[in-house]
Length: 592
Image (cartoon, rainbow, N blue to C red; front, top):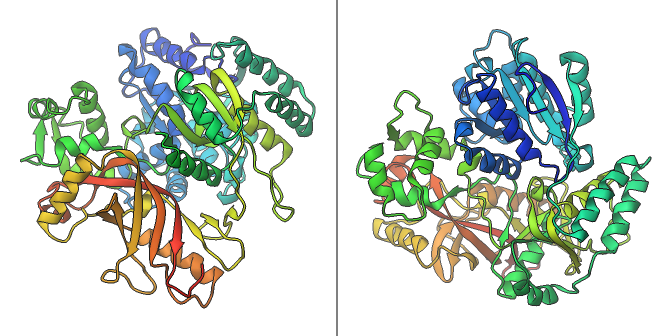
């Protein structure tokens, strides 16, 4: 398969742990070294999630012959195509971006140089391509020249993103996408045979489980097989028992949860047990690492040449100059000035979310808490499956048998060495509100809102925090030093000076130090929830409790916003990453 010609059109079935990333690297190497394709202009690699893209990039960047190959998520590709066409994407959500990019590709007379020069496209995790993103890929592959080829890879048994169809205008499934590639674009099927991930007897059993599930005749049969396997995994007891075991385990450990609500509860309990960890965020909550602002925010000039950049990076020992320069130039995208970086252009792309996945801060740690969906494309030495909490009689699990079976299979197939289960903390009262804004809430009665999901975008990032230069500069100093760690406690207090009844603003304090305010998006989401759940509520809560930091990141906005405060004059500064369930405190006499 790796040595097929450049114009070959292949559908490769690759199960968990079958070396798919190695196959992608081998395919790219053959296309460059034997078929004469350019890694910069002729090749494009696409995948569904940031995790999968990071895995491919990690393998590709380790091979000097492949370093120039572009690797993107589908959402990142959509942003790039629209920016090339002169469209303003700032503030535009990912789904509308994908639809707009599809329309652009479907216009025969549109100028899309990024696509029209391609001679081969590699599409990873094709089983998760549904709805609008499936239409984007179909439009892309149909636009290729007749002598161009593609390689799509995936495993139907790991398809866990069908729920995206609920919010998509297109109803195209991954099966329909593959059928269209076979019928309309002459794609042929090839399977992979070998398995590489599992390194112990207990994880090698998962290989046979996958084979049995593929042969099963129904979703119920597949679910029974994988449930039987999960029920037989070693139980470690409660979360406190797991914490006592962790020091004896080697390598990275993942706690894989059924839902994001459950993951946030697990994260909070780990904080209370003083366990350092990271909570994996959704792909759309992209975070640019703090070293970008740390190196460039105080640059004396807007344009930085390579020699000046190397001198600046020398003061940041965690940054590799060649890699950092390549990633920043890939973000800034001025090819005609390869030895110069325009910081205002760089800030504009960061503010718009047009950032290469490799630059995004993965937030890895020795202990990771994640939903199964967000762990797709990753592998860990140890995987602990968090047991699904018991559901109330009026809270049925509406997932189909096949969907639940695939999720459990993905969970157990992430492990290299060890598999176990742990009991879930109580999730009573916790649910995802299916109505807008669609966030996780805690409430025992329909009119209550005891806790409300706080997302990374709920921190105001368009300008540095602080009313005066001295205060703003002190916040930046704190974020660079004692407040840089993940897992620090965050409290929010209603700011009467900035707030209105319909747009509450909260001042966010880390370890007692005010460092940020909440965004307009958070105000709109909270008020929408309160107005719908409690029509005559007397006002917004006066405080937010039990939030946590997830480290710090580079934020970007208008250069004048930072210049006025003497912070990040080119539009780059530091901001805290904050998330979790915000427990709401109301005025005395009010009830949430």
